[in-house]
Image (cartoon, rainbow, N blue to C red):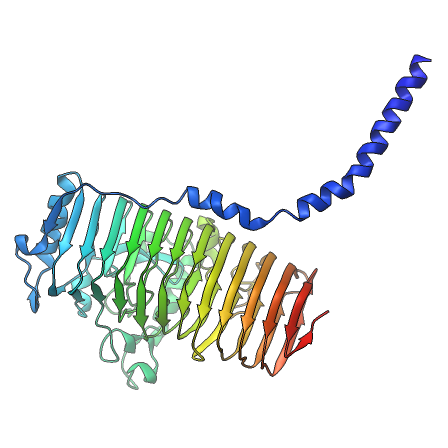
Length: 468
């Protein structure tokens, strides 16, 4: 009798649990992934600084736009650092300078009415420093503002950082006539200069031996903290960058808030967090010559060697005007990307090519997953409203993975060539992409999809037609 009762109890319990599986699975599937944003934001805290000011004019800087204030700025930063930190204040005026190196616990505060004018002479950005260029580590010109393995650093204020890049300097190095390049003059692709860096990375040449700089024409980034922690960039306006504008690399705890970026040059990406963790990009304005925001994690073998993804990134309330892509992941994404959230953003110009763009290739590899967009408004665009592609540029033997992409509440008022483009590989299809409350108007081709599986269309309309 006891055996029978026990057996029946076990059967009943197992049957009951089996019945609960569908309801439990349904509950799991309905968990709002946006709830994770609050947890990410708890780990993003802007650094604070001692209430000590070191005014650069006290150290000899002159705001006449001509006197070289590099030494004075360096002295002010050194004094601030040795005192335990505080603000290095740039008062109203125009200050000519070479590269600026930020040290731990230093806030470079550029006041309203102040402009830092950066030199356009390549020799001023020597000696070579350990940096990253298009996703590959090397020794190259110093970024205009640079930090290496520092903690608690900031650039704040209502002033202007002017890289002074034009078609007369820096930009012609791209090798394109529309950026001032003249036939026969040197550039980054002449005699495989750019390709030489990529070849070194593929051969695992030590970084110390990847020496570039003079004669190679690889333009420096504007702001690049490398392997730093606790970073704040707030309030300032950055214009006329040689190349990528704000490019934190291998950093943790980064806040970029209320920054205006206006740079129309080649590869002038606005903000490129690269292999970074816990990043907030909020209330910023982008008018760029390339992608406005582009999440990256290294290129090809070098990215796979380091193998650190960009993760836990929140983008809120940003406005994108001109650029190639609005909110972008890739293409230097070999280390992968995950847990990226972008919400309440506006694309306001017909000059922008793709509002939402994920781009990678079989040369890159890596995994892109758990990407969430919501409440995005697009006035107009040129090419594709949403493009998720594994066929960008180079081909190789490292098939990427793209999965778990959610796009909610996307409104495109006036379209361009294509609405939604999904491009995977037969052996590595794009999987689990959800479109919810998406409206795209006025496109020539509604959908182009190859090697994409598990695509969900919920209340999605293109050119007024519901997508099933």
